[in-house]
Amino acid sequence: MPIPDHVRAHAGLILADTLGAIVAGHAQPEVRAIAARHATGGVPLLGAAGAAPPPMAAFLTGLAGTAVELDEGNYPAGGHPAIHAVAPALTEAAGRPITGEALLTAVIAGYEAGSRVGHAMRLRPAAHPHGTWGVIGAAAAVASLRGHDAARTGAALDLAASLGLATSATASLRGGSVRNVYAGAAAQNGLLAVDLLEAGVTGEPGGIPVVFGGVIGSGFDAAAYEAGASRWFILESFLKQASCCRETQGALEAIELLLADSPIAPDQVEAIEVATFASAATLSERAPVAPIAGRFSIPFTVATRIICGHAWIEAFSEAAIADPATRALAAKIAVVEDPAYTARQPAERLCRLTLRLADGGLRQRVVCGTPGDPDRPLPESALRDKFRRSVEPTHGDRWERMWDMARHPDRLASTAELFDAFRP
Image (cartoon, rainbow, N blue to C red):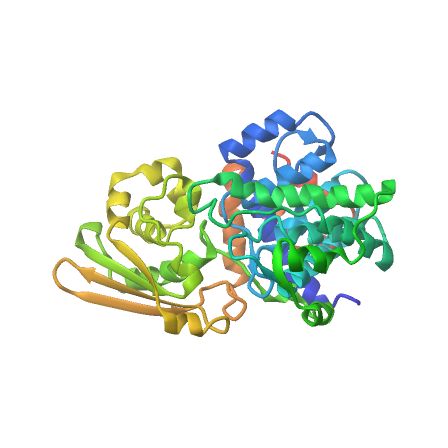
């Protein structure tokens, strides 16, 4: 169906936000190291030096986009649709002349296709959503840029359904940064799915409900999947301001509000209790072993915010994770499930933070959701500033031109302009 102007405008924000996350991720040492190993020629990598063969370029872009936990997400889809669509779309656009309008159309197509599957399936509790249904969005984005009709795109998605990952939800909690690989692998496999289709390989007919309803998932709502065709999931996205898991950010907002009321020194804290809904309450590790585990720890997120004064990328560095003062403070923070809060999901995402001070004082805040949620959208100025913080360390004052191009891709006659602007 035709894409309304307001959907394209919001998708421009999603694209710009995702490109900022990709550039920030490319600055991480492990991403630089693997990119250097595989930058053997091919298509350019947006925001990084070098070029790689198309499937590997999609992988590296997806890896970079999730490396610092700044990419957007979607509650109805149950995951992060944008990076899975953007990474392969950028790779495809890097290899041949593509207009900015076509790139944005492909990102929207990929976002919607992946989200429909994520919304309709029941993901197994032990699985992480990254790399699972995102492969569908990746294939849809590439098929859009190659001009495939509905029937051929459907065949590509059936094939892609068999190329998703079986991922672990606990890898990140235990310090496994392999979790950042999931989206990159799905981006790579989605692009490969379209290549394979064009080479004559076929997928399992009706493979989407088979795989996502009975293999990776434990159920598939066909009616919800069909209804999703007339819904713009991209308008229901959430966008972040902090470099950590979304489910830590209710507690993060609560401590921000308390700090705004009155500063709190670490030695004033006797104890902090965070009560929240069940899935967020699993992020309770007080002594994370690696940066990614810190990003998925409510105690560490709250502690590093108090110690560092922010929850940006540097607050989850190796040095920050090892900081004795931060670890001592995190040890004082307990996370519990409040069953009443769990019962109010998915309509409300509640979090209560109770701060007990050494002098006997008690302060408390309850928040519902967090800034950047669909019902609490961030002003564009905040997203622009987030983009600046993401790209300025590597690109300096060029960030303003980069933002304008990423925010309004429909104005670009060729995506080559975008790659030139983002070149290190």
